[in-house]
Length: 297
Image (tube, rainbow, N blue to C red; front, side):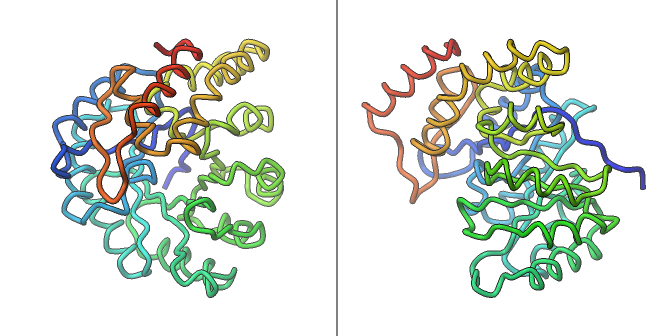
């Protein structure tokens, strides 16, 4: 199998819901059409920002299917197929592979967190990678899982022929440098938050999967474009301009905030699924102000 080289910006796509809580597949397809026109390298279906933990298997598979059918042909399709058990992860990953996903983004299991040490995580990712039909990417998202995969575990896993990369959403730059020091050249180490995007580029990182790319895909892509042209000041200026938006749609207002920002900019955020709550009016006003200041609307 040829080595997979990932470069560019990928949104962990929001899942639009109807007011009654059903998935709005039509709006997902409309978002895809719009994103197809943007400067993106691919799509992540079923990421943290997709409210994937609230979706049942049927909904997940339907979203993968629509994503594959509507994506621009040259774009990479990643599916977040990590479940808590090894067996269920393998099962869902192979179903995603059958539907045409190119690679799987696999979350570190976390429910029995005290037992998820290096040995358990290395065994888990090895078992999954040995038994699935598409390449695997490790997903480290400490904020949600309270698990932070160690440099030692990544060093070992990065040598597995079917583990081709990692999305590190910790936002921890020193740790990113440590990961870089132990992985092979071919391993795709990606940042998972726009707040770390510019610093990561200066370290030689080539790809990012970030919430902000849902509503500001071209700005995220331009940071990289300008940086690679040698216009570092311009890249830094765009990064700093959109930074507060990222803060708002991740840390401060979460997914409801991200979806509202999408709505304002012309994408379809739709409703969140309960138990998440919609934004209050004053929160909506705040997001509007932040978007205006960032010159996104």
